[in-house]
Amino acid sequence: METNSFQPTLDYAKQLDALDNLSRFREEFYVKPDSIYMDGNSLGLLSKRAERTLLESLADWREHGIDGWMQGTHPWFTLSEKLGEMSAGLVGASPEEVIVTGSTTVNLHQLVATFYEPQGERSKILADELTFPSDIYALQSQLRSRGYDPDTHLIRVKSRDGRFLEEEDIIAAMTDDIALIVLPTVLYRSGQILDMKRLTEEAHKRGILIGFDGCHSVGAIPHSFSEWDVDFAYWCNYKHLGGGPGSVGGLYVNRKHFGKNPGLAGWFGSRKDKQFDMEHTLTPAESAGAYQIGTPHVLSLAPLLGALEIFAEAGIANIRQKSLHINQYLIDLIEHELGEFGFYIGSPRDDVRRGGHVSLEHPEAARVCKSLKHNGIIPDFRAPNIIRLAPVALYNSYTEVWEVVQKLKKIMADKEYEQFKNEREVVA
Ligand SMILES: *Cc1c(COP(=O)(O)O)cnc(C)c1O
Image (cartoon, rainbow, N blue to C red):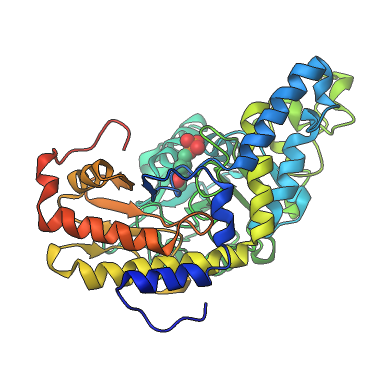
């Protein structure tokens, strides 16, 4: 973006908005006029196109009944495959390598059930201590189901500072007893991007399979899973991608693994032309489709049709470019305006290592978040001390970011946050 260097003024924010080549997408979303949404990394806002494709799918049911499987605007029988094709560009895969199915956690179970093949001493799974808890629960239960003790068989790479992971530390943990590696693409708290290409190369040099959780990166940054030779990946579609609450997840399997039997089999993993032969021997699809289990959740797939159309039009490279710029602007403003209030920026400063949100640490974070909400700003809180702010490329403006920081400054200067308890809500 061609701009002069940073200035803390409202005028400068407006200049940046005027130069924003994605600004036209804002009107595609239901943005509430009296509030500022900074939580698109947790649950993306509803777009008009996502609403439209959901309503069209309801109409398909209304108009076609059972025939909606093959007829109507969005036939259900091939919807997961169609959405896989539409998602492929976002993860750098070919269309057959992606399927939209299950949920993040279920897909992880499927992929571990499929790709975790302990042999003798090589029987451990490598993850990290900053990973999202659901992933850890899934890995622990997968180990137990194979008769291993997660206390000895789930290795978690340690963080040196509680925020970031060092690739060297992960590589050093790739020892002969590791059978499988599962890591995040972007860490959910700090927003650090791991060097997936390097980690994949290093894992493969040692004969270890590696997969990534893309929940916090898909829709925010570009990926090249196939080029990097990543074995598998999985992600959710309700965060940056705006597929709606409970939206069906994404799953990537490198084509070199096509034909590998699914660890958790079900009839929707069948070759499409064979599925209704109703045989008791599964003929798996020769694509990522093989890792589907049961009937797709059609109404939770439908909004993604519209949502992904917007990503295709905007282009992930443009989205990344604005995302980096608007997040850097947020960091610059925080440093300029909030210096005296004890905030610490817990996200990487380096563009190459920073995903789509900024993590702001403060001992009073829980009640600062409540105070922001009280002021019409929607952040999110991660215990014990993190305020995550995610200016989203497709619908947030620079002026909004400016307003957020001004509000935050006022909340701190007037100690408005002291009206609230410093503890998290049930859903935080
Ligand atoms: C959001 C998120 C999940 C959530 O998993 P679901 O199965 O969709 O509930 C898992 N992992 C990470 C890293 C996440 O950010």
